[in-house]
Length: 166
Image (cartoon, rainbow, N blue to C red; front, top):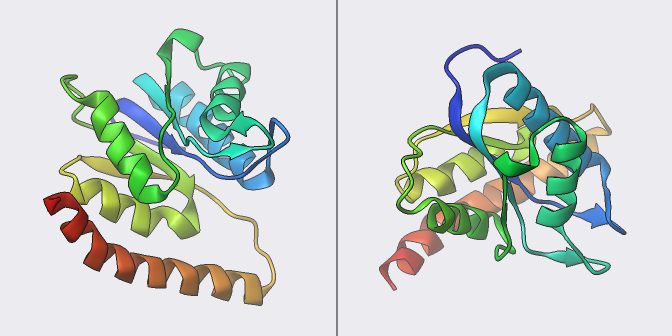
């Protein structure tokens, strides 16, 4: 259960969707965002992710899932251009430009959260974690995810400043 003040916006980071349906990870993210919306409220819920899987964009499937779980359709925005976590951050910043959204809740899998927060903060956004818990699984899968995220974070620390300068 979350406690505190409402978010100005919740940002649900995209991931694989299967044939227009939420994958397991996507379902956890959407359910966590809908729960955070119900518990704390938010002016907007942003479904972020432009990658298409079998003809369906992540953000479209996520938006539909959010509405099915009680988030009013008029509160859901779709960020349609991003293909990466860095793209999620940039696309969200672009979408919110000129809007007074000071406090963002980032909704993603717990193992992905540190890198996501780092990328959003590097763009000057004020973000708080709203993690979607991952089920306990084989230690090899957890190790693989951890190593992947650490390598990606290290790469982001080098690439993002260069990218922001261009």
